Image (tube, rainbow, N blue to C red; front, top):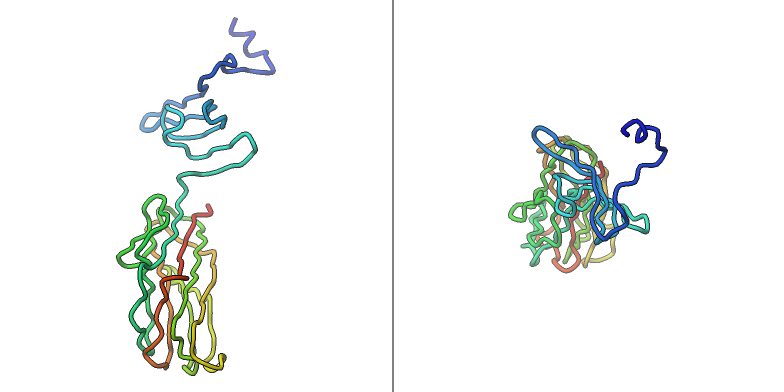
Length: 209
Protein backbone atom coordinates (compact mmCIF):
# COMPACT_ATOMS: atom_id res chain seq x y z
CA UNK A 1 0.00 0.00 0.00
CA UNK A 2 0.91 3.68 -0.02
CA UNK A 3 2.06 3.46 3.56
CA UNK A 4 4.71 0.92 2.55
CA UNK A 5 6.11 3.38 -0.02
CA UNK A 6 6.63 6.00 2.67
CA UNK A 7 8.60 3.47 4.75
CA UNK A 8 11.06 2.56 1.98
CA UNK A 9 14.62 3.87 2.26
CA UNK A 10 15.18 3.57 -1.49
CA UNK A 11 12.81 4.60 -4.26
CA UNK A 12 13.66 3.18 -7.68
CA UNK A 13 12.26 4.76 -10.85
CA UNK A 14 12.49 2.52 -13.91
CA UNK A 15 13.13 -1.19 -14.44
CA UNK A 16 16.67 -1.17 -15.94
CA UNK A 17 15.22 -1.06 -19.45
CA UNK A 18 16.58 1.05 -22.30
CA UNK A 19 14.31 4.02 -21.70
CA UNK A 20 14.34 7.50 -20.17
CA UNK A 21 13.08 7.90 -16.62
CA UNK A 22 12.13 11.23 -15.11
CA UNK A 23 10.23 13.28 -12.58
CA UNK A 24 8.21 16.12 -14.10
CA UNK A 25 7.25 19.23 -12.12
CA UNK A 26 3.96 20.36 -13.65
CA UNK A 27 3.84 24.13 -13.20
CA UNK A 28 1.16 26.63 -14.08
CA UNK A 29 3.18 28.52 -16.69
CA UNK A 30 6.28 26.33 -17.07
CA UNK A 31 7.16 22.66 -16.50
CA UNK A 32 10.57 21.35 -15.44
CA UNK A 33 12.05 17.88 -15.21
CA UNK A 34 14.89 15.92 -13.66
CA UNK A 35 15.69 12.54 -15.11
CA UNK A 36 17.94 9.98 -16.72
CA UNK A 37 18.62 10.48 -20.42
CA UNK A 38 19.23 6.81 -21.09
CA UNK A 39 20.63 7.23 -24.60
CA UNK A 40 23.34 9.56 -23.29
CA UNK A 41 23.69 7.93 -19.84
CA UNK A 42 23.35 11.38 -18.29
CA UNK A 43 21.38 12.89 -15.45
CA UNK A 44 19.69 16.07 -16.68
CA UNK A 45 17.72 18.95 -15.23
CA UNK A 46 15.79 20.95 -17.78
CA UNK A 47 12.73 22.81 -18.97
CA UNK A 48 9.56 21.10 -20.14
CA UNK A 49 8.49 17.49 -19.79
CA UNK A 50 10.71 15.90 -22.49
CA UNK A 51 14.32 14.87 -21.79
CA UNK A 52 17.10 15.90 -24.15
CA UNK A 53 15.39 18.95 -25.68
CA UNK A 54 16.02 21.85 -23.27
CA UNK A 55 18.67 20.64 -20.82
CA UNK A 56 19.89 23.25 -18.33
CA UNK A 57 22.30 21.10 -16.27
CA UNK A 58 23.79 17.82 -17.50
CA UNK A 59 25.91 15.37 -15.49
CA UNK A 60 27.54 12.54 -17.44
CA UNK A 61 28.69 9.14 -16.22
CA UNK A 62 32.22 10.45 -15.58
CA UNK A 63 31.05 13.31 -13.35
CA UNK A 64 31.44 16.15 -15.87
CA UNK A 65 28.81 18.83 -15.27
CA UNK A 66 27.86 21.13 -18.14
CA UNK A 67 25.30 23.88 -18.67
CA UNK A 68 24.58 23.76 -22.42
CA UNK A 69 22.46 26.93 -22.47
CA UNK A 70 24.65 29.13 -20.24
CA UNK A 71 25.37 32.44 -21.98
CA UNK A 72 28.81 32.32 -23.65
CA UNK A 73 30.31 33.94 -26.74
CA UNK A 74 33.61 33.99 -28.62
CA UNK A 75 34.10 36.31 -31.60
CA UNK A 76 36.91 37.50 -33.85
CA UNK A 77 37.22 40.19 -36.54
CA UNK A 78 36.91 39.01 -40.14
CA UNK A 79 39.47 41.60 -41.31
CA UNK A 80 41.92 44.17 -40.00
CA UNK A 81 40.45 47.46 -38.79
CA UNK A 82 41.30 50.83 -40.28
CA UNK A 83 44.15 52.82 -38.75
CA UNK A 84 43.18 54.11 -35.30
CA UNK A 85 43.36 57.87 -34.87
CA UNK A 86 45.37 59.41 -32.03
CA UNK A 87 43.52 60.35 -28.83
CA UNK A 88 40.63 58.07 -29.83
CA UNK A 89 39.16 55.27 -27.74
CA UNK A 90 38.40 52.69 -30.41
CA UNK A 91 35.69 50.04 -29.93
CA UNK A 92 36.83 46.67 -31.24
CA UNK A 93 34.15 45.07 -33.40
CA UNK A 94 34.58 41.32 -33.76
CA UNK A 95 32.10 40.65 -36.54
CA UNK A 96 32.62 36.90 -36.90
CA UNK A 97 31.16 34.67 -34.18
CA UNK A 98 32.85 31.41 -33.28
CA UNK A 99 30.14 30.66 -30.71
CA UNK A 100 27.25 32.63 -29.26
CA UNK A 101 24.99 30.72 -26.91
CA UNK A 102 21.77 32.64 -26.35
CA UNK A 103 22.60 35.25 -29.03
CA UNK A 104 23.83 37.97 -26.64
CA UNK A 105 26.72 39.35 -28.75
CA UNK A 106 26.05 41.86 -31.56
CA UNK A 107 28.53 41.46 -34.41
CA UNK A 108 27.56 44.76 -36.04
CA UNK A 109 28.73 47.00 -33.16
CA UNK A 110 30.80 44.74 -30.90
CA UNK A 111 28.36 44.90 -27.98
CA UNK A 112 27.59 42.13 -25.51
CA UNK A 113 24.26 42.46 -23.68
CA UNK A 114 23.78 40.67 -20.36
CA UNK A 115 20.68 38.44 -20.45
CA UNK A 116 20.37 38.32 -16.64
CA UNK A 117 21.86 40.04 -13.59
CA UNK A 118 25.02 38.24 -12.53
CA UNK A 119 28.81 37.93 -12.58
CA UNK A 120 30.44 37.67 -16.01
CA UNK A 121 33.97 36.81 -17.10
CA UNK A 122 34.95 39.05 -20.05
CA UNK A 123 38.22 38.55 -21.92
CA UNK A 124 39.97 40.61 -24.57
CA UNK A 125 42.91 39.35 -26.62
CA UNK A 126 43.69 42.10 -29.13
CA UNK A 127 46.50 42.16 -31.66
CA UNK A 128 47.62 45.72 -32.40
CA UNK A 129 49.43 45.96 -35.72
CA UNK A 130 51.88 48.75 -36.62
CA UNK A 131 51.89 49.94 -33.00
CA UNK A 132 53.40 53.42 -32.52
CA UNK A 133 55.85 52.90 -29.67
CA UNK A 134 56.53 56.58 -28.87
CA UNK A 135 52.94 57.63 -28.20
CA UNK A 136 51.88 58.97 -24.80
CA UNK A 137 50.36 55.65 -23.71
CA UNK A 138 48.17 52.82 -24.91
CA UNK A 139 45.40 51.17 -22.93
CA UNK A 140 42.84 48.39 -23.15
CA UNK A 141 39.40 48.79 -21.59
CA UNK A 142 36.26 46.77 -21.05
CA UNK A 143 33.43 49.27 -20.86
CA UNK A 144 30.29 48.07 -19.09
CA UNK A 145 27.16 49.97 -18.13
CA UNK A 146 28.31 50.10 -14.50
CA UNK A 147 31.95 51.13 -14.95
CA UNK A 148 35.04 51.06 -17.15
CA UNK A 149 37.59 48.34 -16.42
CA UNK A 150 41.22 48.95 -17.36
CA UNK A 151 42.81 45.63 -18.30
CA UNK A 152 46.00 47.05 -19.82
CA UNK A 153 48.05 50.25 -19.58
CA UNK A 154 51.51 50.94 -20.98
CA UNK A 155 53.39 54.23 -21.13
CA UNK A 156 54.90 55.45 -24.37
CA UNK A 157 58.48 54.44 -25.24
CA UNK A 158 58.15 51.27 -23.18
CA UNK A 159 59.01 49.46 -26.41
CA UNK A 160 62.08 50.31 -28.46
CA UNK A 161 60.40 50.31 -31.87
CA UNK A 162 57.10 50.17 -33.70
CA UNK A 163 55.65 46.74 -34.38
CA UNK A 164 52.99 44.29 -33.26
CA UNK A 165 51.70 44.74 -29.73
CA UNK A 166 49.26 42.55 -27.80
CA UNK A 167 46.62 43.83 -25.38
CA UNK A 168 45.18 41.04 -23.25
CA UNK A 169 43.22 40.78 -20.05
CA UNK A 170 40.23 39.31 -18.23
CA UNK A 171 37.84 40.90 -15.75
CA UNK A 172 35.12 39.39 -13.59
CA UNK A 173 32.46 42.09 -13.87
CA UNK A 174 29.07 42.81 -12.35
CA UNK A 175 26.30 43.30 -14.88
CA UNK A 176 22.59 43.86 -14.50
CA UNK A 177 20.09 42.41 -16.94
CA UNK A 178 20.27 44.36 -20.24
CA UNK A 179 23.59 46.02 -19.29
CA UNK A 180 26.09 46.20 -22.15
CA UNK A 181 29.82 45.64 -22.52
CA UNK A 182 32.26 46.73 -25.23
CA UNK A 183 35.99 46.09 -25.71
CA UNK A 184 38.19 49.10 -26.42
CA UNK A 185 41.74 50.18 -27.27
CA UNK A 186 43.17 53.70 -26.93
CA UNK A 187 46.17 55.11 -28.80
CA UNK A 188 46.95 58.32 -26.91
CA UNK A 189 48.90 61.06 -28.75
CA UNK A 190 50.42 58.65 -31.24
CA UNK A 191 50.46 58.56 -35.00
CA UNK A 192 47.38 57.35 -36.83
CA UNK A 193 48.83 53.98 -37.76
CA UNK A 194 47.89 51.20 -35.28
CA UNK A 195 45.12 48.82 -36.34
CA UNK A 196 43.31 45.86 -34.81
CA UNK A 197 44.80 42.75 -36.39
CA UNK A 198 42.32 40.09 -37.45
CA UNK A 199 44.43 36.97 -37.05
CA UNK A 200 45.14 37.05 -33.31
CA UNK A 201 42.20 39.06 -31.91
CA UNK A 202 39.51 37.28 -29.91
CA UNK A 203 36.79 38.60 -27.60
CA UNK A 204 34.83 36.38 -25.24
CA UNK A 205 32.38 36.43 -22.36
CA UNK A 206 30.77 33.88 -20.06
CA UNK A 207 28.05 34.05 -17.43
CA UNK A 208 29.58 32.69 -14.23
CA UNK A 209 26.42 32.85 -12.17
